[in-house]
Image 1 (cartoon, rainbow, N blue to C red):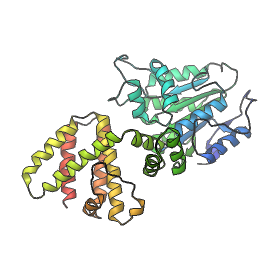
Image 2: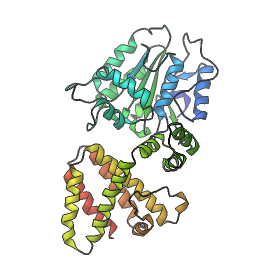
Image 3: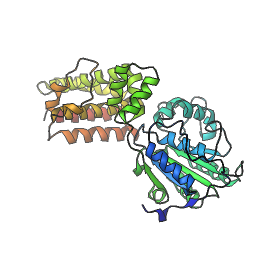
Length: 383
């Protein structure tokens, strides 16, 4: 996208910008920090930027750091010219028509404690663990009203728009109008896990910034600083694929990962037994009923784990053992399983897992979905 598509604004009444940005929240990403620093020093900050963070790379933390440079404050969300838009859902306390304002305190806590978290982490934090969450037109209209007023400090107003993959169509249209006709000295920092989650019209009006994966060294040092052992930190950093959230989740949730591996191993062994004994299909249906009764977040976590498991097995199958980062917690041999993945079934297996994840997010009936998953996966593994 050319710069002609992007409007820039001067930094109004912002005379205390240093030539070096502190970025206290963001790890690594030195090139992007320099890029953002230069945009301020040149007085050429785009009015709308989209940070594309494929997972745990620091999209939200980078937006928060930039927010604090444009509108200085002792902390995030502690200034009336800090504005936020994020998904919400009903909870035990907010039983209907949830709004961002209902969860402002929970949101500030989340930003301080989980700047590398994703939407599911946020929904769990706010007490809506098994809900999808979305950004409604009411919250976009409230944002429009809020930024229409003059800046409290007489300078800039900054809006961090996060979780836009949960943006409803009507809300998206209203947000587009706001970004097309932004109030003076108002900046929009959007954070999404994939560029495809942005409306094409929003993409065309934004400067797109793709965050590269974090280095193993950065993740390793962060885990060490949190008190984890060198062995655990090194293993988690290798496994993370540049994703700090994945590293934190892996090192802090060993029991959960061990349970996901156990569930998958039980399924795989049952699937292979079914080739010689059709009566084993009853065992597969018992497994699918148990998975269908799990929460949607548990189902998605299992599918995500299974995708990574299959990719690791694929590396073994294609003799790329030096790239393998799998460490079984159930004495399972990936080397013995790997030969069952080959050029005829590998892509269909990955596609089946991706499709199952998509159907979970679209609230498909869990028991029917996993019954179909079990039968299709069994066929593919035994092909």
